[in-house]
Amino acid sequence: METTVRLEQAIKKLYVAFHNNQLHPECCKQCAVGNILDNTDSWKHLTNVHGSEVLNYVGMVHQNLGRTFNGYSPMELLQIEAVFLKGCGYSGAIDRTCSKPSNPTNKDILFNGLCAVVTFLCKLDNIPDVLDYSKLFGYENTKHKRQLARAME
Image (tube, rainbow, N blue to C red):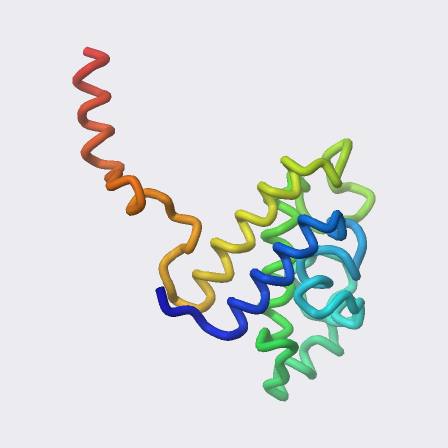
């Protein structure tokens, strides 16, 4: 499958971070976007709240100038982080009203967040989801649902 350079690099960085225990949803340097941006936290200045999908003034300036960071626009970066946090079980942007998992560095929680991010990154680049296993197993949702429905009757 043909992928983009930015997708390939992002997945490699997230893979390494996950396996080296360097992924933490609440740390701007170790979250999904922090890892994609080489463990920097400069992206946090694009919004006022970690996990928000709303660009602040600085973020809007960068967005309107067409700037990208490791291939991703400011808006895309905020969307990626929001997807990661939701995949990890956060109710939204990290503020005092946000519900969050009791152990945010639990491998299962982080894995769910990463899967959500990889699916979203593929969607951004208009390529098939690299995590879609249905073709590997020759599985089609509609056929199996009908068979299951008949079996349950």
